[in-house]
Length: 289
Image (cartoon, rainbow, N blue to C red; front, side, top):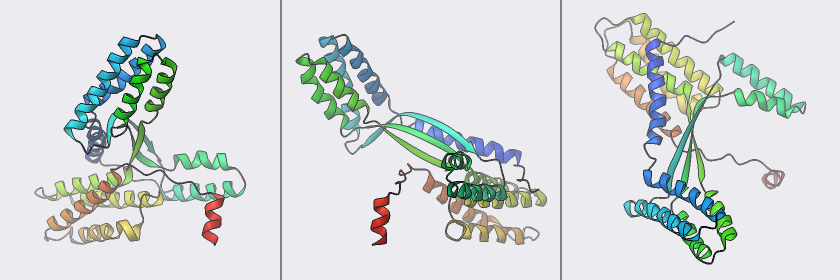
């Protein structure tokens, strides 16, 4: 039975570092003012329960002040991150395993076993998921200001209701970083490092290129792009490298092109993913017209 190739130790280090960088990149965008504002709003909710009018007014004005600092800094700001969480899902099998699982999912759905199929589908992924909770800076200060008159009139329950509604306007963005593409990218980077050394180990270079191809095949099987659209040029560049490894020809330009293409693919994924619109009977009827 076929097994996945073992990952090069240096590639593993690079992949781990790259994953941390993707998360850190989002964490760095969290601002102290936005976090303070959210914490202050939470305090206001408690103060409203205690019917502490003066303290509630003072605290909500502080929250608005923190947000106004952000707006003054960047008037075009739309959302501000206030929290970042990460989750890794990593299917351990081969391309053949994935195809078997997909066939089973189709059979289960046809048999009406939707929940069993769902359990399998949830595992058919290999990705770093980054969840960013963000505050809508355009509307949030306005919502807070609208609550001030209610507090002044001691309409504490109404104020609390509006405040909770404001808290619920926080949005959660999801960024999906496909691990097979990330691994292929880091394997190519490692291969480039080796190729630039004196008397590089050709066998290790071949293994790294084979590993990169395997990871791209896994990416396609799991639905992270299509070979003819997303990976065709990359496979062609890898093939060029494989053909000239035994010669004295320079690999510098090919590696440069490969790294750029993989970097461009990763850049497409490194942004919030739009929610998938669920199909409905109504939409199906419209499509049949």
